[in-house]
Structures are given as structure tokens and as C-alpha cells.
Image (cartoon, rainbow, N blue to C red; front, side, top):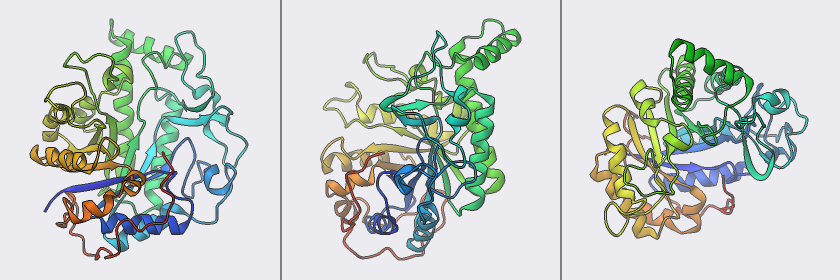
Length: 382
């Protein structure tokens, strides 16, 4: 059976080597064949890097070596268990919290380049705020070069099967009004008079994502590059009051598919199937809206394990299968663990072994331990 069965493991889900081992063992036992393992959250690293500082949540302080390497361990465990390991990075989130990043070695990107923060129409930098992500402007050429180097380093030194891009977007419509972006936009308008600023931002982001893929493939040609994208591309149904990737974040996922900017799109369709097809944020309607892109790019549907009970989760997987798409990615391991869904998946819709499309047959035996037996904390969120 060819089907991608992915699960997101957030950076909050693990704090020790035992956590990583337990999580991956539970995932394999539940019938998954892919792990999207988060290793970059806010300009930091959950792996050994010469370009980004160690995450504070690992070592207790930004830049402090925790004494172990989560990504290296995850790669080894995934290989042993017959799982694909996709390194998951947040692209444009530079920091999170009310205080700016402190000193570290290497220096945090926003400490070294505070001008990379997004700015509103009045030129004001996005303020630091408790619990909020601070975004880096993806139109900044220097930031693009930095991220390309991050990707090249990551892919070169770790035996990963895939690179997964998240938060590859602007934080809002009215952002990217720094001096560099203003200059670049004026230059683009000279070449193409009448060019709309939103269209320009969408093109800039699409080209940036495509270059990240190119850099990854230079180091590892067999790698698959995927991207999590907003679950509503455009409100074609007049629902109103919904977030649209194309409009609100300048995230033109359809253009990414057209340009081959990624190998796989993962639309985050986090709402349950509606009682009547076509009702507001109906899961089935949104899957059908993305489904035609499956002719141009790999397509795995992002599912929210907290959208309903287990019957809802099974129904969503059935809808994806009915459309003949590549498979699913479920958010997140912690929710599956807390809600007791791991054992149910392993005995139910994931009972029959499967190989991800484009992947090799899984030869390592899945552990026959109880799927929900992990003692890693399930309360952490990404």
C-alpha cells in the first residue's frame, strides 16, 4: 500500500533523549511511516549548528549546548524503526516573547540583524509581545541568503529524508514596508509598471521557497521538500471572516505548485467535516479545493487531531483516500497521545503497513509495544 502517514512532533514534545526514543517508538507502533520532527522554532536550533544558537528550552539558556543532539538521535531512531524523518523548520518566525533574544554564540539573527524584522505601513517594526512570534521579512535578500545557508548546513550534516517548511509566509497583509523592501518593490515596478504590491510579495515568497528547495537538493538530491500551508487558500464560498493564505499572508501555495517550489504541499485543514458539504470551513470542501494540485505536486492533507473525536479523525482520513491523494500529516503527536488515538490508529485505519509515495519499502520491524506507552510529556505544544 502506498500512503504517506505523517505526524508532526513539535519542539515542545521532547526534552530528553528518552523522550525522543519513546515518541518515535510509539509513532512506529501506531502505523505511521513519516515523522515531521521540529528542529527550528524561532531563529534557534535543536541540532548542532554553526549558524544558529541552541534553543533555550533545551540547555536552559539561548546558545547553551544541552549535551545531546535531538536531530541526530531522531535520525538514528527513525532509521532503526523504518520511519522517514523530515526535519521541520519554521522559516520566517524570528523570535517569540516580550523580550528580544539575549546574547549567544552564534549570535541570534535578530540580535545581529534587528532590521530584518517586518515593518508596517508606517515603517514601525513589529513589537516584541508575550506569547507572540516576531516575524522576519522574507523579502530581505540578506535574510534569504541566511536561510539558504541554514538549509544547506542542515541537509549536509544530517541523514534526513525530507525538509519541511512551516511559517513560510508574511505575518499579515500590511507588512514588509522596510526600506529595503520599498526599494526592491519600486525597482520591480519600473520593470513592470502597475505591479500590485501584494502580487510582488507573493512572487518574492514563492521564489524564496523555491531557492530553499534548490539549496537542499544540491546537498541531498533524493530529498523531498514539503511545506505546510494555510488550509484556506481563498474563500471561494463567501464564508467570510476566515483567514486566507493568498490574501492574509501572501502565501500563494498554488503558485508554489505551478513553479515546482516544493515537492509536497501540506494544507493545514484543521476543521472537521461539516454536517452538510460546503458549510463553513468544511473539511471535505477544502480537500476538494486543493485536490487538483495533486496533478502538479505531492499533496498530503494536514489534519488536526483535536478537531473532533476518533470517528472524526477516521472520517477525515477516509475523505483524503477517496480523493486519491498522497496521504496525511496529523497535528500533533501530543494530541494523539493525550486523546488515546495512537492505539486506535494502529488497530484501525493504519493497521495495514504502507510505504510513502516515492519512498522505499520499510524493512525495519515496527515495535509491538503499546502505541500509547510513551512517557514523554504530552502537554507541550509547538
